[in-house]
Image (cartoon, rainbow, N blue to C red; front, side, top):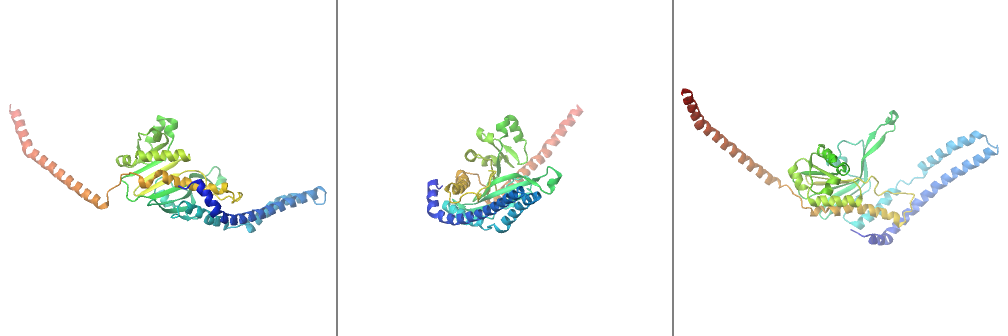
Length: 373
């Protein structure tokens, strides 16, 4: 991981020339908007003074008070927009910052992880009404293909009848979704999510977790700290317990303590999903900040440090996880088990036949003798 001292040197020698060009465009745009607002305020002031001196009727001031904001807003929308400024900033500033961390990573500012890929994780229990995102980053780190982007999923809420025309949205998830492809499929599946019920409610919280069957069967952990902040579920307890290693639990606790945000992890097939619910926008471009200020550019460094830090903390390429055998061996094993089952059934039938041939007639003879006596 690159240090902040290295990033400061990179900013001063390589990034600053591009930022200065963009800063001139930002300042020029902001200056024009301020002139329009200032002109509107000056017009209202003159109109007010004329009304006070009885040069103009009083209602003219109220008309101006209504029309000036509309005119300023129209001028802002129609003539004072630079539609390519944000995109140019991402390509000329964020892309070099990403290359500074790892040159093999690809950045697509307008793309994001599709809904189907998020839904496959099982973290979303129902389809959101609104699903958006941006800033898709993909590539290979330590031989593991990864991709991550900002995702915002929300559902529509209605408090009053008028909300049907202007609906409000409640966030289900807002943060970073990371997907990594493991080289070989896992043996079983595992879902871990932040759940502090046991931490707050004690034994009652644990009972609620155990009886939550939405995500599968509840897995018990011997790690007290892990059970306090996380709950784990699986469709098969035997394989799920193998995946819930001490190594995974320690790293999730490390990530939680470091970023202070809810985190979820899913392992299924050859895919690992990691969802960090930060409840804030990553790579936020603010036009009211001076772009040549290092403190502002450092926020992008911190955002990337969070995401890439999760990858380093998990160390996916070093995880010692149980993996399933390849398809050919699975078929052979299934065939052997099928053959063994047939042999067991045949032996059982033979024993039953012998019992019927030998034991039953003997019992009938003994019963007849007992009746004669």
